[in-house]
Image (cartoon, rainbow, N blue to C red; front, top):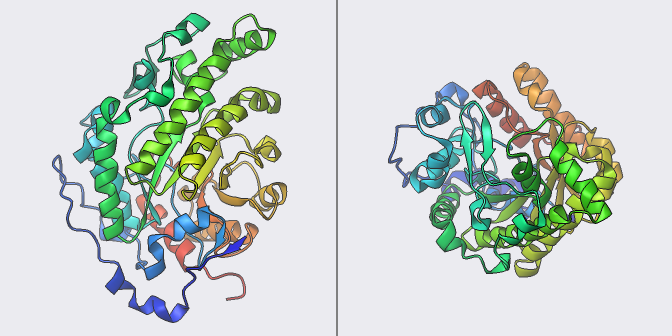
Length: 404
């Protein structure tokens, strides 16, 4: 654990408000969505070091308190978010800069997490490889392009590193550019994210969410025998595209990138080592080579059973799911690997006292305040009480340790 050069004496914190004005510059062009009830909002105030505390923690630095953000913090648990999700299709929301920006900011206005994450989807860059998709209400992601054979992979661009994301996904630059300005005014960090290559390959091959991922696993076995190398060829193309897409997000303003291996739960340790890990490492290496000072976080959902295989991903921080005890995760990864996580999302359906205790326990097991990045071990669930999110964020920012 490195000591942050930006650790601030406590006495400086009293001047917080002078350094962190709340942004008033952005006005939604689509619906009024700043109507969050006062009772649901965070009670904490911003301090001078909040602007980059998440970034410093993601780099493995010891920071002045434990920072916090939540996967799916921009989500349907918020009434303001549902004002959009019930009226507009997903791709319209995520690819219309005014709406995507508003949806990204709602939760920060309410709870003051330590980062704003762009409202988007891990599938968003697939069309750059000629893969058509949608996210259909009530059904989830639907992939319309079949990838089964080496010939299917050969129809994709020969050189994914040459993809012009400004041309193919012009909305990303505008969304991140606006959010970058908002993050600065709100005294917080801007988080970008990508899907890991195996996860995007499996989504594409299965065509939708899958309980067993059987078609993909059959292709893994065919790839292993040499009968059909489509999967390894596909994940390699995805790795190059995803690595460069992450670079594009950084160049548009993202200050940290999280890589989501959302389908890690479908993989055995052997499958992870053969197909997911090398491709994810390649994507991460592309980002780190071009932007060495921007931290990259890797999250393998359901991958805590082979956490020891994630020590050498090449990223700056490993995020862990809720299925592993945080103290055990810290033991497996060792003291030199920064860690994020891992409160069970269902705890947010508990009492205020239960939520606060879960936060304190997670922080203590990670080593104490300032020694990890607090998150859930999966995304905020639909139906989560809004006030519960505020209780979690407030307790994380308040907690000074067992002996304080």
